[in-house]
Length: 303
Image (cartoon, rainbow, N blue to C red; front, side, top):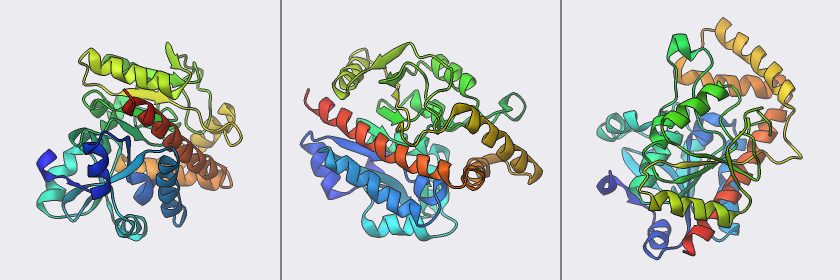
């Protein structure tokens, strides 16, 4: 994989000189947010990383080439082109062989970022075990990739539409530490609370960097998931989120939505039924997570 990467000059220079770099996923641009919010948010996340003294590296596959650090034209293409593929590691070979363009999921971004030896990543929420997985076996590839990509991943927990208790159980089985960033509860994406306690927490970027160093020192290849709650001023109440999700799930079932189409469909439904409030929260937590990831990256680079 490393030989296939095209690393943007700014990112390559930062990596070579030990400067902090934060990887950013691109499915949020092509699938997670509506236009024009998608491009605006991608730019805002990159700007947030820069404000904290780190270099952003938005990752995607463009015309069959894994790109580490998309440029403005590539960002606009991902944001404004219909039919962009959603790329997990299993999709790398077909897209590369056929010179296709795709936006990387958390798993896809992790795999490419690990090959580029990037230490930190920011996203909205990781994928996980879907509700009803005991019959559908619908479990995100993000979980397996988190077990073999040694980055710190700042997220607002897993997406609320998932089965959060089972997601945490699988992460435990895969030996992936889940650490609260200034919280002792696993965030539930739109809501700060999930009712699921975490054993470990850190209070500062410096503590997060220390934990990431310790993870490297013990020889683990697993990521550390840093659960960062959404900003308090835009977080939704846990009970309200559950009601909105139940309604969206019924809609998805009645419209026979399944597989890769499920998450984007549910996110759109939630935005509609909440009168845009879930979208506002999603954008705010994405930018906030990019900020926190950059701060940890800066602290980690000081070692």
